[in-house]
Image (cartoon, rainbow, N blue to C red; front, side):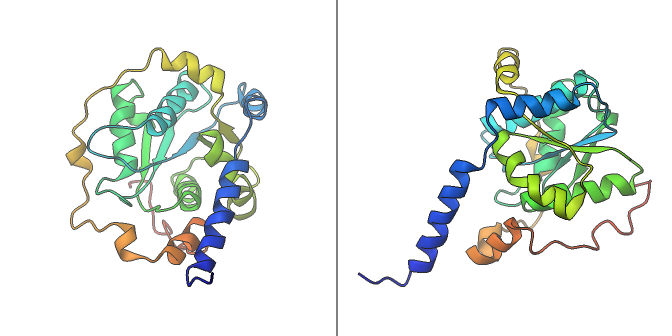
Length: 227
């Protein structure tokens, strides 16, 4: 039976295969952590994820607590959360900052990047902003899926000198026992005149963004130390 959606089905099948294979194993994640645990980075980039007004989900909570772990261990001097208002009307980076402050990361060591709408843009724009702000050493930290997905892009399009630090699952299991669910005033992170990316862009246009094909290379060119 022929179908007009055949190309879409092919692309969805490709994505399904990519998702199931694109994740660091527990051993690989531990190796990457062991390689950097005695280093200290000026700033570590943590990509955002959409936020619902019902509260943070498990992935969002995990990324923020992993950032706190790296800060508490002295691996990260500063944290940069990245993410615009993409699928919901809340700036992902600002939401993450509020939660991070509530769980104990000092606000003066938290930075935000609010232009990125895709994972590739998270690391590209954050790295560029961090360098403009004077930070010399930068790393990327997130869950095992996202870090592996961004590994090649980061090395080829951003810098070969940006280490990847995925969750260490056993460490996260210990951290999870101490996790709290603080309340934040999420309305402070609401974007005015918000329109979901699904309303603004087609699937294929969003897919190109996901693959890093629509990056604004001029982003943060005029950024000063006062920003």
